[in-house]
Amino acid sequence: MKSWQISRRRALKGMGATVALPFLNAMIPPGVRAESFLEKNRPVRLAVFYFPNGVREDYWTPSRVGRNFDMSPTLKPLEAYKKDLLILGQLKNNLVDVKGTDGHYTKTAPFLTCRLIEKTTGANIDVKGTSMDQILAQHIGEGTRFPSLEYGLDPVKGGVDELVGYTRLYGSSISWESPTRPRPKEVNPRFAFDRLFRNFVPGVTPVQENPWKKSVIDLVLEDAKSLNRQLGAADQNKMAEYLESVRSVEKRLDSADDLKDFEANITPDIKKELIRLNVRLNDYIELNSGVDATEKVRLMMDINALALWSDATRVTTFMFGNSVSNRSFSFLDGVEGGHHSISHHRGHPKRIEMYGKINLWHSKQFKYFLDRVSSMNEGDRSLLDNSVVLYGSSLRDGDKHRASNLPIVIAGSGGGKLDTGQNIIYQQDTPLANLYLTLLNTMGVPTDHFADSTGKLEGICV
Image 1 (cartoon, rainbow, N blue to C red):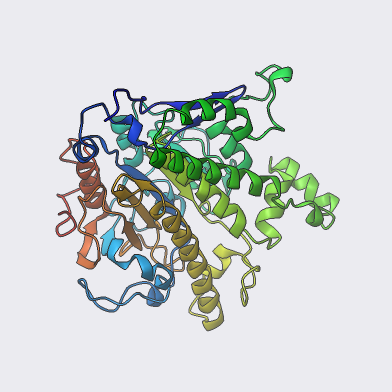
Image 2: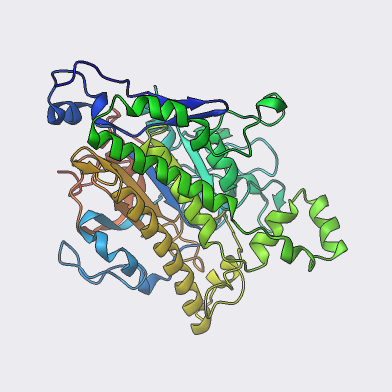
């Protein structure tokens, strides 16, 4: 029985670095049973993973409902997590699925708000509500270093999509802290890592204090050694595992490939047009060169998982792509061309096949995140057990532009509150908002309404 404890907000600090810690037994007050403390103080997290342009319909939905279901071709990579999943069918974002509205922007921006956006070509954007993740962040984010963190692959786009008359800002965010203010997302893994673990701010921190070239682990090493002397064996092992995870990500960032080899193929005319459109050259190359995005995605997912494990935040979102994303997936065998173009398959067998391969790649990356959080322990449970992880898209089929029967998967039980291991088909056009109301209530937000909700979803809560 120890006679001391460390704060849950304890972090390792050094010149230019702050490394928040995962839960340790030393954070339990003296004389309190671990089981009792964890039951009352175990935080629940939300992580949202959004992919654009919908799915190949015939490869998404499992063939049987209930618990005795078989994983569909697209969801097959998640087989090992079958007992941790809720696959939900026939949910519809009702207020945005309106005839005559745009097929993408009016579906992407309100994926987590469930309200029809204001049509505009300017800066007067308005999504008519706060997104579900931000409502949750306002409720459970107090006391964490970041109330929420937003990540993605594609940079925020400005300008107007002249084909439909909407500002592209609507397609760049699913997280809205107010109806007129999207949350800024980080798309560079190095910047995402440094924001999480470093204090250095370019242009603000004095040059002599710039720790850029030093590992964050080296910067906090003395503090780590000092704390380690106070910890028991189990906590020492856990901290070593955590710091090794941080260092592993940092090493991969140091060796990440850049895009210089592709720059030689960019003509002066293209460069001039990119300047006119205020598009960064590296962003253009990455989206159009067919460079393999897998390692970048997995770096972002590792950083995302570390942010949640260390309790630096309890709410995250990740966008695999912006609305109308035409990222080249030619790095996948048998795929030629951009994602958005392929999603408009018009029933063409080859395009449908390529469409399915892109969906499968997304599921494999999602599985990678589940692997990470399921391996991170918090007392007698994993981080996955203590989280709600939402995976889905704002469209069913990119060729039809419908927001009905959306592809939605939930992983994790939210601290034992969700009855996972089911494939559930609801009544046709059940409001997507009903799911968000249910999740908000499950995670402690006392509200009885969200957007066009008609009540909580049946069958998913314990």
